[in-house]
Length: 176
Ligand SMILES: NC(=O)c1ccc[n+]([C@@H]2O[C@H](COP(=O)([O-])OP(=O)(O)OC[C@H]3O[C@@H](n4cnc5c(N)ncnc54)[C@H](O)[C@@H]3O)[C@@H](O)[C@H]2O)c1
Ligand SMILES: Cc1cc2c(cc1C)N(C[C@H](O)[C@H](O)[C@H](O)COP(=O)(O)O)c1[nH]c(=O)[nH]c(=O)c1N2
Image (cartoon, rainbow, N blue to C red; front, side):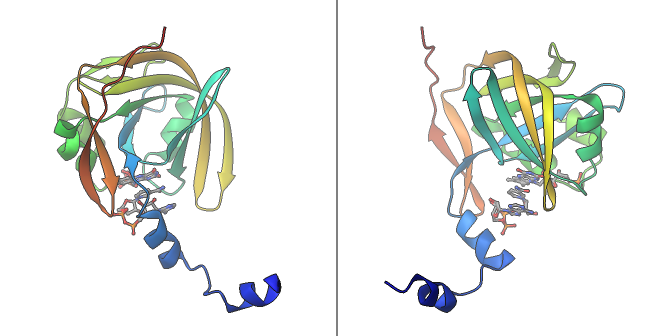
């Protein structure tokens, strides 16, 4: 087995090939919000992942040069709002190039225990304190301890796959 020769023949992993391959992965769509001394901010994120259930921890990857990144770290708190199909326009609004107040004006919010905005009608929400930040390349990985959870009524979730939106059945049953 000549692993070195196989590797030498492989096409280089360019940013474009990486993105093309990542586009094949279906992901839930979230609007991640924050509020506090650094002000209100929010952005659309698919790079959200469960890390451990003890203590309940998730991670969010945010591009460092986005207009919103600094506010999250300065406020030290965020809410992951997982979107239902009706929120597709909201995903586009929070996906960039729209002033922050215009993003929030398009939906109804309440304040979670961390101070971050919680989206009315979300499939689920996870209100968090940001415990640790690790910078990797262009992004900051925010490790977040979950302080409060809500599970909404919708039985369908919004996903992003193949560079487009789709809908999946996502009835969330309570465990015990
Ligand atoms: N993790 C991210 O930062 C991320 C994830 C999804 C989409 N986006 C942004 O949304 C827009 C539309 O994306 P698209 O999926 O239609 O097409 P695309 O070709 O830009 O991205 C395809 C896939 O590659 C990954 N990706 C894209 N940009 C990335 C980045 N800067 N860092 C890490 N992973 C990245 C994501 O999984 C994405 O779904 C682009 O501007 C993209 O940068 C960013
Ligand atoms: C479907 C989809 C998914 C993602 C995004 C976009 C879209 C449309 N964006 C981009 C992100 O939302 C955008 O950069 C922010 O809104 C910040 O943009 P401004 O710098 O404020 O214009 C994004 N950005 C990021 O840092 N992490 C992520 O996981 C994602 N995921």
